Length: 433
Image (cartoon, rainbow, N blue to C red; front, side, top):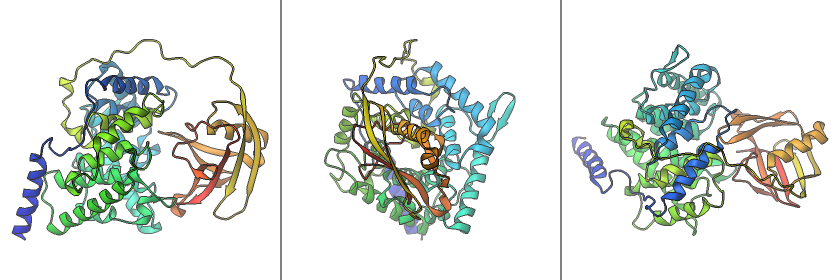
């Protein structure tokens, strides 16, 4: 056992002593930096001031090399107020985890978040919500949320030295179809955050029992292999929206990869090419690639020194405006279907303005025939998330959700981002994941 422990410690030491420390990724050069700067500014300008503040955006801005301290402090103040007012009753476990990471990245203590004369301990709250997730798994076989959020929970608790059993956690995040697949498709996002969580457990300075250390390594190897299998010839991993988190995961797990298994620069340039095209106009999408462009990961939040940050990201006072010229109309077909119980399958053809998003089509059809096309949604960090159609409610305990499709193909964007085209066949389908 002593020999195994020595080997484990030597392995960790080699990880730390490797060039670049734990991170073996790549970063933009000075010639490419204007693209990153443009992405940061668009993130800030795109924030919906009427929506709840998004911790992922502040987290990404804090991990960047350039900063606007006034904007970041304003975001931190709003996040703190939102946490004090809503965290206990309204936040999911993953939301609490992201708030913790954003607070920590801002050099603010997540155990003592204050606003309006009240204080909340977000680490203790996450411990409670994580426990509730585990209890729901024990009773129903599924978490209250999903394994993406559970991985965020582990990552945040690990970074803050919260109550966490490495043995139980390694079993919780072990390979499994129910954990890492959605609608038959491997979830690169979930696997990426799970890798970050495992690496944190490996490196947080507390010796692990040999069996647990071995289990964590087995988990990470499986996850890395699965992510690499999703790598495309153009450098994207999964799709362009999962690529940012995949870059974070692969950059800290180079010891699990064969030489040449991943060309980081190819992936980085693929992401950079997409910035001028408006691919990351959703600030949440932008937040998940920004850190990778700077060769930083969510594991770096505890290493930031806020007092050393430059204040070198100036912003104009006027926000960019959208064109006001009248756009032509297009026609699309829209279908809502119960793909689980087969209780309904209704279609309609509607006219919308060119450039309309999927969500606009849903609103138009609901106005035309609410008996068939009524729906409800919640506002998530990615935008509107569909929770029911015709009163049929998505249920995590039954692993059901509403899937968005175009011409029969699942979409990688949400209802609030996907821009529809003329003659397109759109569908919202009740599905088991």
